[in-house]
Image 1 (cartoon, one colour):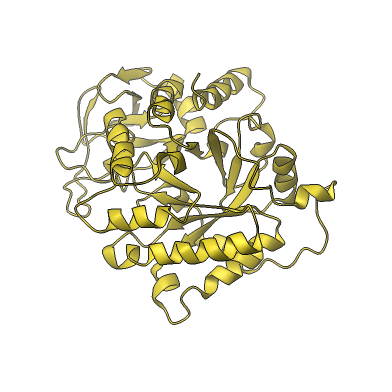
Image 2 (cartoon, rainbow, N blue to C red):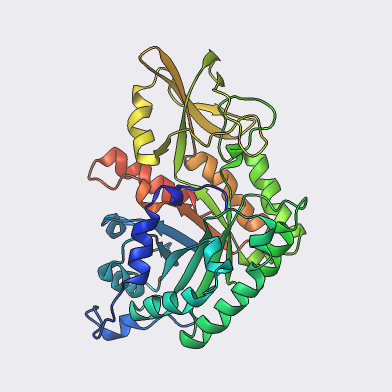
Length: 365
């Protein structure tokens, strides 16, 4: 799949976590009933997926809104019990590479992952593609997901299956139709509504990573090609990009170094990411303050480090609120964020207010 924040996480640790889990003989929760996977009847009209990588910040999440937590690396029994007590599912994120589909033991990993997930009392699996989505790879996805659905639903009734897709369903290749076919066997399809600037085709300037119009176009492309809108999860970024300007003309005109990527003359593939909490710490020190781009409908600011000008483009409550209107407009299944632990959950009152605003932005009135 297209590059995401999840790519920052250690795949080696993830593989170790998934393959080395030993059986839990006793329920780790105070109430044994909290180890039961949630029933298929425990569905919500609008889903809210909270992606979580590590740490204990989950204790401060807004559990009145969460329906599913996706854990990337660290299994936390306390998190599982807490989530189930709030009628929220916990699913494991698992990477799929080409070796999982093309080697002689292809698909043997499904049983291993299923055993690990069941032994941890988890509620399902969320899959991401770490080898890119070329035609040969995507062609195997529909049958793969059919197999996953059959085995997971039989072993863990009510279990939940989801996967990532790029921000747009590109009909110039067969990948789009393969993803649409695979979606029939999944409960939810997470449309990554960012990393639009992975391919910069027109110019080499710093820009919003999740421009409003492209987000709209991307969501529409999947629906037009046959994905059930009620299965679609709009996934928004709780992070931004810190661009170094090769030439700074004015705010909003930060020319960056050319970085060719997959045919595009420029890309933000090598641009450092900043978590939302890091952005909020840097913003007051900027030379420009927050600037709103009305065309891209996203905020940015300018700061200087040494002799170099920098532009930081990110998403905040205003830009996210504009995009959550798509939930009603297209009757989407829900929304998610990468990652819930990228916000600041300290005792600082200003930080707490900003974090609360980010959570509230995910739920349109």
